[in-house]
Image (cartoon, rainbow, N blue to C red; front, side, top):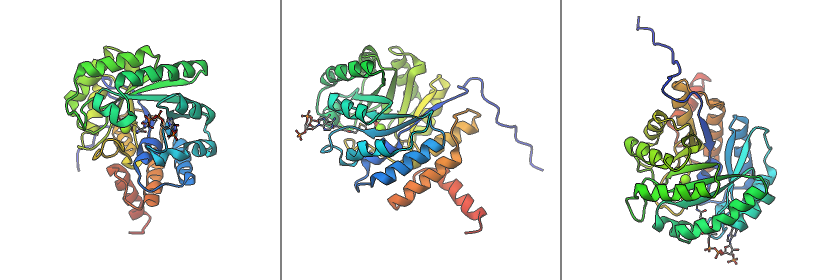
Length: 318
Ligand code: HMG
Ligand code: MG
């Protein structure tokens, strides 16, 4: 007889609850070359809200010339079945984007800049300082309309154009976003180059400028390090992460960068550690299978694909 495995008891050194922001409908789909019908996006978002996500990044009010895939954001926001308890957020690079997000009924707006000057110019066509100046108007409007404000810092761990990014550059931009009144700040590994000790160092550096409890890790999985980075962040008390169903995604202005860490894989890890998320993994796997079928390729979640294959085998179809 094999020895009985101890049951997974919550580890007191790790957070007991972790918030997952599902970014698949935005970060995931923005990178798809084929325009996805709004009805498919709506069906995906509704499946995700039904799975229990309290936070879904659902839309992006950016220039349609820059990111054509997101041009249907208003239509999508108008058609989703709003689940009480789910916050639907949208990217807003400027006041024009804010006004569109407000009209669409976004619950939270996201201002996004970079710790890398080179990436800022490629992604939003302005310097970091200019982006912060633009965001001041967005932040004031968000306050006036009592919308939550989230800040996002791209390339906090490395940049596809300039390479290394200094910790001081991360600290500087986090401080600027804090001063604008962000409720939460996301520290993003846009090109997925971080490894665990680096992940901790960058997060701890950001935490010198902003409350650690309101920092989130946004890890792309280009080099397969995202789960290890998330675990390292859990060890220092970070309890909020972004992920993308089926591992969809990438940034159109960071060529070669692959998707966000897959939500199914993050949930499998967290639930296995005894950490609560409030999210039903089975329904997320089903949502991942749904969007992967639409895209005509297998999803990038190892856990999601394994679970779906097991269900198929159990149902006698294989
Ligand atoms: P620009 O060309 O410098 O803007 O772009 P502009 O103010 O000169 O305006 C030019 C045209 O864009 C005008 O239209 C404006 O009306 C229009 P025209 O007169 O030529 O017909 N425009 C807009 N239209 C719709 N909504 C708007 C908007 N603003 C201007 N909000 C801009 C500057 C910021 C708009 C542009 O660079 C842009 O849209 N960039 C977005 C790029 C993007 O979406 N990247 C991906 C998201 S970020 C990401 O994925 C990273 C993240 O996941 C974290 C991580 O992983 O790193 C968050
Ligand atoms: Mg991203």
